[in-house]
Length: 431
Image (cartoon, rainbow, N blue to C red; front, side, top):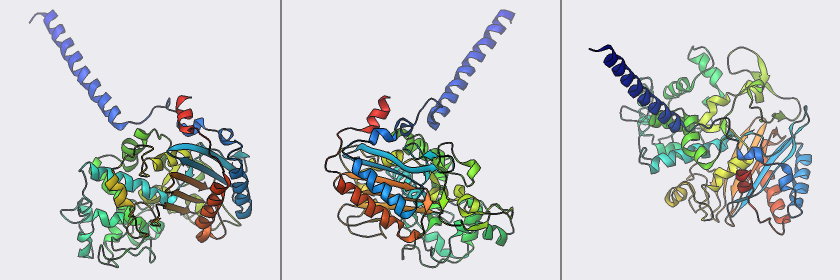
């Protein structure tokens, strides 16, 4: 063959396969939908001053009093009406020692509000026909049919469905034990080197008897929601966090919500510092190193909590997600009316909601979250007002903090006689 023809042929193959490789690489990157550093989250474009108007000034007074009364270091508040962000402001300190004031861009651990994010993702997969809510979770024909999960002490686990996990009716007793907060103990029991992985936790739980027949009784279960995260990974072939960002958050323009980290030095640059009132409780760090640490930093494995309680978010971006699933026509929802109704039955209850913590039968839905050093509360009202409150401090009486937050917000809302007629989301998007 003529040398020129050989060179030409080689050049053709180089260009042809090079173009395929480039196309494949581009498609992979597009499918990941991970933003570049040039994407600035909307929350970074919001400042406290943007919500400092005469109309909303009473809110400042109410929340400053609340922080003082409850000895809370810092808070972030976001309010929407008719799908518009009309208030986004921080109170107190994101980091008191460094005199960093709280503001809309700061990330907070949102604890069990993470379950709502997981539930929304499952419902999207359900709408796409990739998951059925009556699919079995375990057993040879279950979604999680990996060989390591086919050994269990109670055959009733084969009856657990995706719907059971969503509604906390999987058969575990959340009040008796919570494996996600006992991972060090489980690692020791299984004779494995800490930290225990989620697969380790699942195998351990499968070796225990269920407390109830699946579907028969409501019992709040963090473990069940981490299984939903595992199901998302098995169904999509992506990590839980990556898929939620790709399929739910990024399409909404939400770019600064992540699975958080356990230790102070691992926090995100714009993440608040977490506080406990008084002398912080100490415990052995979850990684097995034997160190005594504050519960807020190393006592809990935030990454392990993941789908059940591991997300960090700013109040405005979290509210943007809530607006997209609130069932109001002012902004298009990312779920169908049928799915939203399934998640929030119209009757007053806690047992049949999906993702949400409860409904009151009058169009109010709420979701709570609590961990050492943080509390979160989101609420949707029938008058098209949605709101988010995030705190970076554990109060003296954690059991009542969500009631205090709701009372404070109701007082704040009543104090506003006229709402501003603008949308801070639009302002942020244009600047």
